[in-house]
Length: 331
Image (tube, rainbow, N blue to C red):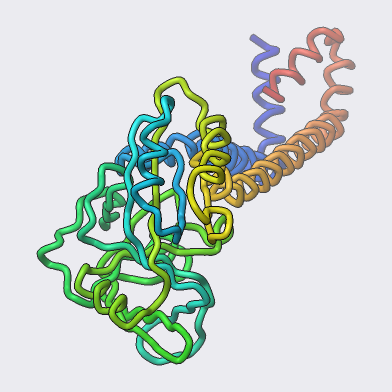
């Protein structure tokens, strides 16, 4: 009982002197926990989030962008592969050497190739879904789309601050084509310029026909397919590439791009992983600092108690009793 009373007396005396140390330690530990939780959640859940977005769109495992004119032969070849589940093809307009800027007046344009698909296209794979204000994927209301509407990658909203209703201009050479942003869509393919230096937007069929009539860009197709359950996407992709080279006329002479889902997921997430790794290292540094603060506080506490310890020794306290008093105060 006497030990407990003395322990309380010492603790109360020293707590007043160590309030700042305690607050610093608690703050560092709390910040460390939050940072570790955030970085861990992002690192371990990002792949699942990407996969969920792709599943909502019934996304493809592999896409092939090509201007090769032999569309039927390419589709037939893909459909004939025993490891391929579903095949679809989307007609697109590819604007090589294009640039874009906000509004109608050039202040500073960004040079990037653009792929334009049709808002009205409803294929079996990679369906167009808009990301609403609650970050939910919803089908577009095509009846409400204006003729100059354009749906942009979600990246342009998060990275460059575009909003629905903003003006958006694509420039090809000396010609400029103005649109109004009607929404944003998330996708694994053609959505992050650091992975593939191209954006894919969607415009109305009427506007697409208008651009084609002006011979703007290059007519092409995006061929997409999924592989059967249990099959390796990369292996199937590696098997199909030489078949296209051998079977499709002029395939090697064309400007063809083959993109595989897993590589695109990793490529689009790499900067997020790097950022979260930096956050984790920072959190670890805070934890180390907290340990040093605790160590300094303990040493300081023992030094402040030397006088009290000497007094208790003079009154006949044993080493065991003094140890219990000191440890009890620390805890």
